[in-house]
Length: 199
Image (cartoon, rainbow, N blue to C red):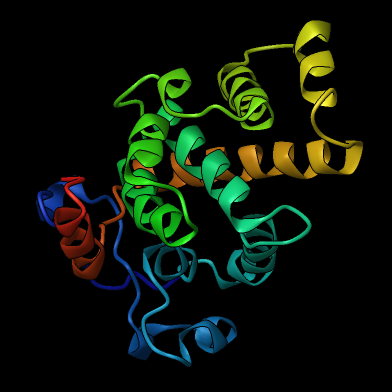
């Protein structure tokens, strides 16, 4: 199995980063297509350590986190809020900039990041129902209450609920992956966060 080199993230020492992130010249054959257009980012560079996993995980992640029948703004609400609940520095930072690009305001993103109450910023009943669903699903340690399912079903169709719940689950998976492996936030993202007053 390839070991790669350690790419030291800002604020973390080499000892604090548990794995090396592969660079294009080190990538196994199965993972090479993911590096064809340049640096694919830390998640892919980490998954490239196990290319058999990367080739099946990348399509799932791409579909779950990209705009689909669920619009981009709504998906970013799910991703940022879930990441904040899970305390994932990498995902919060990476998706703060994406959420801004998806049309969320600075105040909305700050509330999703748990820097302000969401009820003070969001006034759409549909989005507030979604935020309640995210909080319930992301924090759950067992069955979800019938009342919570009734609440979300009053604002979203069944296929939307399935997709939104899958996005919460995939985001939680990435949250634990990125946090456990101390994935580094890229310098371009850090610069943008500083410009937007999110550092």
